[in-house]
Structure formats: C-alpha cells, structure tokens
Length: 209
Image (cartoon, rainbow, N blue to C red; front, top):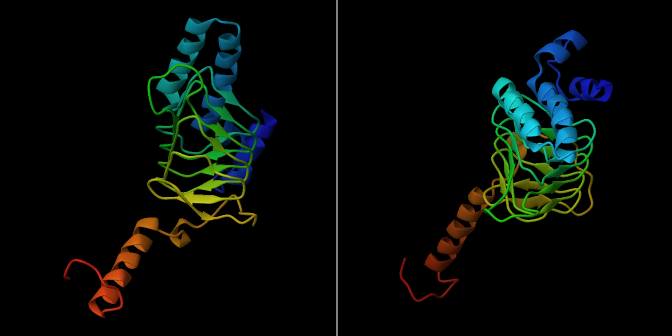
C-alpha cells in the first residue's frame, strides 16, 4: 500500500497529502479492492469475488475483473470508465488514465485480453484490445486503438494505433500530447503531395484530377 501511495505522489502533481490520497483517490480504492477480489477468485469463490468487483465499480467507476493479474504500483488516475478484462495482465509501475479499456475483441473463451509490461503509460480514452503484448516502456497516446503487439520503448498513437517512435531510444513516462504526430494528418498531407505531383505531370495515372 505504501508503494501505491508513493506512486500517486510521483505521477500526480495535484496530490498534496497522504490523507487526501488515501481517502479521495478512486484509483487506489479500485486497486485495493481488486487485491481482495483476486484472492477470492483464485480460491474459486467467484460470486464473492464478482460482488466485491461490482461494489468497487459502483463507488469508483472503475471495472477490474477479479481474474485480472495486476503488478505493483498500478496508478489509475481519475479512473472513470476504466475497464480491465478477466485475462489481462499488468506489470509494475503502470499508469492508466480515465476511459481506458483493456478488453477483448470477441466472445471467445481462454486468453483474450492484452498483456501490459512494466513502465507503461496508457493515456485517456485509449483502447487496447485482444490477446496482444504491450512490452515494457511503452507510451500509448490519448484515444488510440491498439490492436497489435507493441515492442519495448515505443510510442503509439492513432486509430488504429501506429508506432511513431521506437529504435531503442528511451521514452519518458510523461509526454506532451500536443507534440505527438497525427497519423491521419500525415496521410492527408501525403495525398495532397501525390495530387500535386499528378497535376504537374510528375505522376502518370489513369484518371484526371
């Protein structure tokens, strides 16, 4: 619990005191409730585990399935609308913002949710779906939809998610969303350049602009 509280102070500049963090941070309450629910789930006391999970969801707005495996120092900031599926695993020192879904892509049984590595940041509104691996030291930009595995030391943005920074360069846990590339904008600019080349006769095509 001390590590969880320390993680809050490291990640949230608005945190002022331990009493404030312990009594008002819904993300902490959800994580601590999950510890109890997960123990019951592992003992096959599924109804009791789900009951605790649903009570926690009612009070925090955060839904964590009792079967999910969560590492140390998970920080869920703001938290409303966060959903973490049954077969999801989360490593250590992970930060998740509001509206994030770690979900499946269908109704199949078995392993169907993502594995999240250590030191991962998943920004607000992002969806990470399916039995994929998000390796350690990855940043996922706001409102991204990630459907494929992501290697370590990467930044992912867009719908669907595109890797925009990698090559083994370390990426800080915090980043300025205003400076992230926009894959859709880049595609539009590419099309504009292609059209301009066609008009200038640099590209021969079967249609007339």
